[in-house]
Length: 169
Image (cartoon, rainbow, N blue to C red; front, side, top):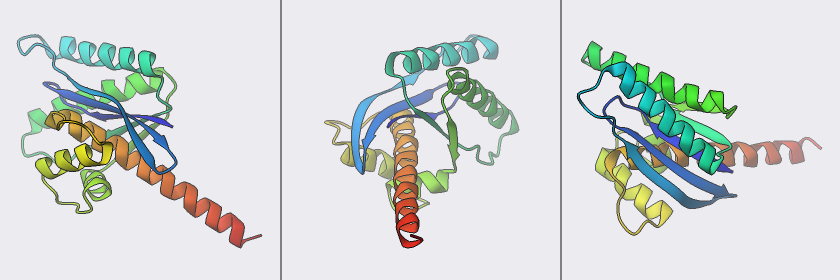
């Protein structure tokens, strides 16, 4: 299964694409979409939407995983984050890819094993899990972590389903 993970933001939207073959994780690509700082929010959102759509068209992921909104101290920043998150989700939905949402706690727990890990720990573990030659930028490593979280979640669900179906027969 090919999984696109997204860490949305109006200034920087990270993306990370992985291939999951059973429990094996393979890195496909990652990067950061950075709209110009001095353009209107609507234009930034359009850039995020178009670039994610292009990535989806190029790589054909079967799942789209995105981090849930956390409670932010600054309401204006939270609203911009929600806008970026919305257009990112719309890119997945437009291409008929199932969209899955995970909390930061779920992502960090799945990747680091500790729900309150910091960004550097997440960055280090994504590098180790995907055997990357160098650490990805923080926004991209967060996106890769979301994709890994989804992959682990789906793998575990599949194992549990097999166990339950074999014990009920």
